Length: 232
Image 1 (cartoon, rainbow, N blue to C red):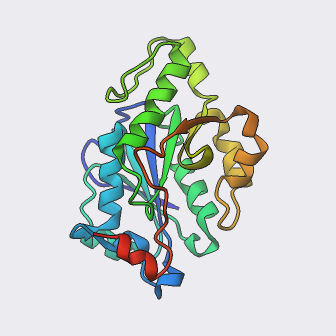
Image 2: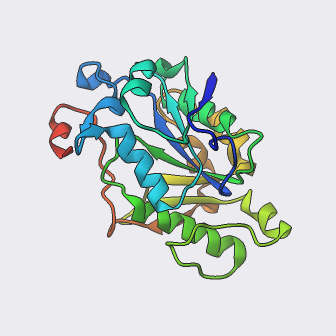
């Protein structure tokens, strides 16, 4: 795994919740077109996903790249992102999740909010709702979804490490998902193949706080040629 910082301030932790974008897939069912490079609103899809995380309140964003990573760097504008190379991307999403979480070691992040690059129907409002739920749960005080969360005292920081929060659509768990740092090792150990964190979340379902986002987002994937019609 190789990590590259794309701006002078990218190594500085600017928020306690880091956005973690998984964008390494090769688009096997799309004829080998990496999803990060699909065009959406005139630009590579990876740019759209980064903007979603930033607009939702994640100041620090790590992007895991794999298939045609050099071309993604050349074509996509990803200022101040931390770019993480996953040489094992062909082994599935689990390897990208492990690489992304490993890249957060040594930062000030207390939680990671994971978003998939091929879900353009999920916008900033869903990200903001998870961050607001995180803030309310850890501080015991409601917080406006538009305001980025920052720890208010050391006790709150310790509690933040134990958070498990997921977006839900009509009550069904989906993305994005927020993992407190205390869960990172367990998530990484359980992440195999294309399952990502699914097994870990299933085994810890009693601890997962669901945040309904079905009224502000659509959790469809861009997986097939037919799905490409959803891109603008």
